Length: 74
Image 1: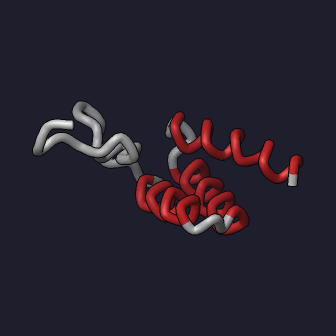
Image 2: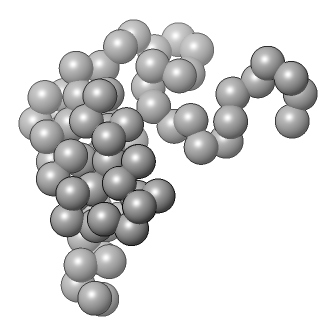
């Protein structure tokens, strides 16, 4: 990766060129941090808040649905 480029794990809307700051972006970032801590309940709570604040936040909706499979499998 070149110096000055964003990490592959920077998946927030705010970190990508061309996206405005999402209202739910802060909760999405909290959710991604919770993911690194293996805290699935907190991750899902934060993703749910992000989607409620910004229903068009596709990335948060995608992660929320994906984590639903983890809950079923657990």
